[in-house]
Length: 330
Picture 1 (cartoon, one colour):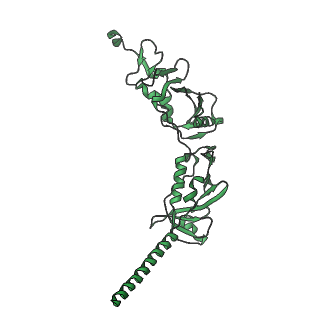
Picture 2 (picture 1 turned 135 degrees about the vertical axis):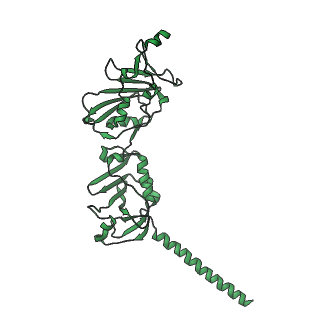
Picture 3 (picture 1 turned 90 degrees about the vertical axis):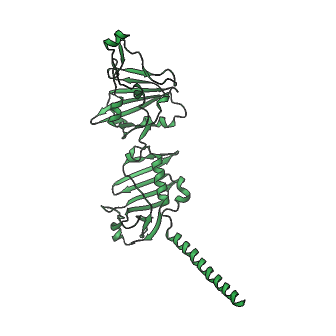
């Protein structure tokens, strides 16, 4: 009996020892794989400034009154989803394995200060105080991870995480300027000159199709033309980048006015310049809740050529004379 008790006690001691080793092994592992920026676990929503740089390229993102802006894009509105994804990706980064602490070897990991092997530097701030200052190097070849260095420390690390950072202002701005469903559109005016200007409209939101207002006598909509496509220009309206208002030529070549059933008007004016088309937007009947739209009047925009071609319509582009045979049948 005593022998059995001794065996059980010995087994208990062994199990206790194994448990202690497992627990401490887990603690050691968690210590080794600490977060690259542990502050992001609790302060991610408090970050209000991000500076990304590499050699002479720099992107400065700042948040004011809840809106992120891009300094290198004339403080235009940043895509909040892109900013959020960057912070979320950084929050997941964990340090896996120590690498060199010799600055002479930083270049091998693309963690040099400058040159072809320069790191991408990312600084995070909150209320003017620096939260993190990290350097992102190249992707490791034999394992999943990226080489990093944090807070200007000499030690470099192989980290676990993925990151794709852009260093052009146009890559961070809001690219979809408008996204208004056609069901909200009451009328669209296409202004080129007095003779060729025309309007399409609907009397109520329940109407399925637009019609040409004041259609000239003996004319009809061009065969095969889907008139509703002419009213769909505000849906997913993308821009290439922004421009300064001072870059606008004196005279526009086209003005398109969208009026919503709510009374809100989008007035888009288009200006050709060299090999691109610039656009200016003005609003009428803005309500108190249209804070986003109010901001858009401060800039000019470079739009894709296909977008201008789709909107650049004259009356003669959309109507035709009713064929004689059709008139006889009527």
